[in-house]
Image 1: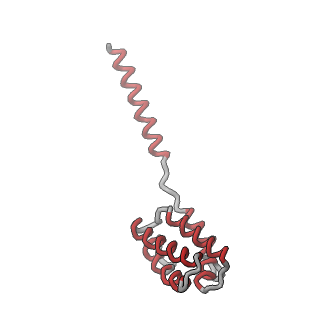
Image 2: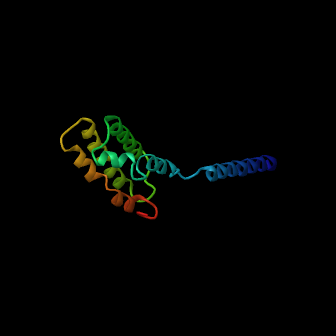
Image 3: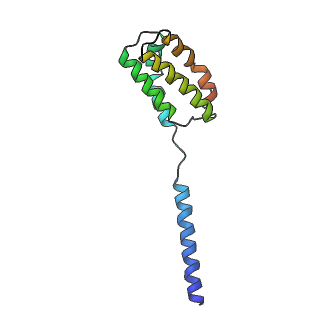
Length: 129
C-alpha cells in the first residue's frame, strides 16, 4: 500500500511540474504585428495612410489600407481597452469601405476617423512619440 501511495505521489509531482513548465512556456501575445502594420502603411510622410487621407491614392491602395485596418481590428491593442480599439478600427473600416465603394465624401470621413494622435494616446505604449 505504501509503495502505491509513493508512486501516486511521484506521478502527481511530475504532472504538476509538467503543467508548471507548460504555463511558463506560454508567452504573452506579441505586439509586433501591430508594429509591422504601422511600419508598412502608417509610418513616414509618403505612407499609404497619408496618400489615402490626401485623396491621392489609387483604388488598389484604398483596398490595401482597408485590409490593413481589418488586420488591426483582429489584433489586441498594445495598450488601452479592446472596446476603444474596436471602435476606432471599426470606424476606419466603415469609412474606407465607403471610399472603396466610391461614395461621395468618403475621403473626408476617412480623414476624420484616422486620427493618429488620438489612437496613439489611447493605445500606443509611450503615447504619441
